[in-house]
Every structure is written in C-alpha cells, then in structure tokens.
View (cartoon, rainbow, N blue to C red):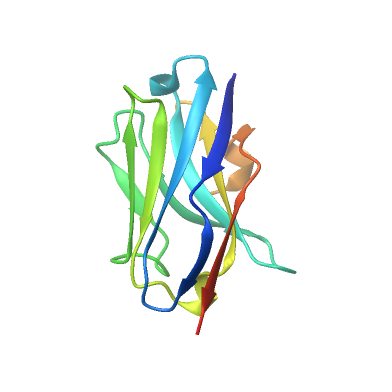
Length: 124
C-alpha cells in the first residue's frame, strides 16, 4: 500500500491558479496509477483527472479539460494537479487516489488508496 497526503489547497479568486500536490509514501509509487477527484458539499465525489503509471497518458473530466493539468514525478513520488482559470464551481475538497490495478478508469470505486483531501475555494 501507499499513503497519500495532499497539499496546496486554499482560497483563490476566480480566474486564478493553484497547484495541488499529492505525496506518496510506502511502496514504489511508480507501480500505481493515480487520479484526482473532488467533492463539493452535499454532492457525490466526482472524477477530475487521471494518469497512467508512467504519466504519459492522461484523461480529464469535460468540466476541467483545457484548464487543469495532471502530472507526476515518480522520482519524487508525487502527483500534481495544476489548476488554471479557476471558477467558483471548482470549489470542493480535492482528493488524490491511487490504484495498483491494471485496469482503472474514472469510477472512484476503482481506487483503493486515498488521501485525506485538501480544500479548494474559489471566490467570485
């Protein structure tokens, strides 16, 4: 297993940027695919972005495509989420997730390692 710790959340004005980090410890992180999800108050946990073990292949939710970039540095055991052109509707708790499964997608049930979350608040 790996332990995941997110950081980088905060309060930002609409149109601004934030970069979230997810630091992994434990087993070799390069053996895990990773993803970011978010959950707004009273709503379900939604998929944001995911990437493969190598970081070469990425996939985004339509709502963030063109604004967010997911990446990873396996030498640093860290996954990042660069968030640009932020909107008030991006306000949520953002969670990092990982899976050692060979097949994975956008369903949160497919990930068995989770961080504690970091709050992102975008003011209008």
